[in-house]
Amino acid sequence: MGSWIPTTESERKEMLAVIGAASIDELFSSIPEPYRMRGWEIPAGLSEMSVRNLMAGLAGRNTADAISFLGGGYYDHYIPAGVDALSGRSEFYTAYTPYQPETSQGTLQSIYEYQSLICRLTNMEFANASLYDGGTALFEAATMAVRIAKRNRVVIHPSVNPTYVQMLKTHAANLEFDFVTGDDPSGAACVLVQNPAFDGTVRDFTALGDRCHAAKALLVVSFYPVSLGMIKSPGEMGADIAVGEGQCLGMNLGFGGPYLGIMATRAEHVRKMPGRIAGQTEDHDGRRGFVLTLQAREQHIRRTKAMSNICSNQALCALRAAIYLCLLGKEGLRDLAVACHSKAEYLKAKLDFAQILNEGPTFNEFAVRLPMDAHLVTSKLLDRGFLAGLPLHDVGAGETNDLLIAVTEQRTRAELDAFAGALKDAACN
Image (cartoon, rainbow, N blue to C red; front, side, top):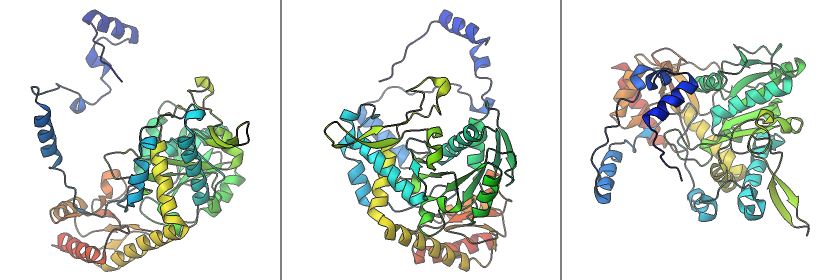
């Protein structure tokens, strides 16, 4: 449990002097002026009942019943009841980091089974656990590639989510990385690609993988797990590292998480992979057991030799993903992918008033150019009960009239028809 330790004025001055700041304002000068704290504005104390009523009123102001066509990396998939029922068991829900295998066999086995499922899903040989989300997983893959190739150039393909690109550059701000945009692997540690692309376009990066390997660079593929029910996997394309956002595998949509960063790689690179890796072994009586292995994290070895300082325990999120995949099975995942794709194609065909911007096939997400400003259109549709999509100009990935639309298995034909009509009415009038 955390605690608050007050400091005296003289102690604050002493600490500021040590770090070379003249004042508290100077210490926080890197934070833009509009975002700086000006006061806590904490009201007088209330009873427990009054606080609960106040918070319930605030929560009730949220819009939770809109029909969602939002995507861009996070999707409104159905979560089977078994995911909550099993992951909510106290043995899993309250478990902490499994440093002591003799008391953590259940958690360690769940991580091992999750890793096995991810390897089968991606057609890769090794997987880890405990990465935060898809964006930080991409950063960890880039640093892993730099360690392997002993080069600092990182090529970012235009297909990559622009939010991930921002995260990547933020995390690498104090590292000597040379970021370039394109698909030329010459002199690079790796080329980062995304499939399906941020705009939803599906590509086959096998030829690029061959070019990367000829140039002694690595191919890193950021993938959408549900799409692998029907499209080519990273391993089949020759990827050296595969990463992804696991939210679609049984995680609820939330304000930033908790989500799940997926990472898998080939056997030859496993010793350069960050995060937790659970391995299967035998005890002295020959019984099967599970342990953390290849523990090249900063908690276990000298920090200067660590692969990463990634340390949050995402095992509960990994467990939810494992349960979700087991409940669906191979055929269920294929059926889910087909449903998402076919419903997106149905909607796409009904939007004859908009220009489809994708230059190739899509999975469950596509970009359109509307007759008017996308922000204005999404605002109109929110009043009609629809989260209409993501205006691409907001993330620097399109013009003001461009909208990214995602369709999942949750959308019924009636909802698709109603949305198509409402979008046409809002965009053309």
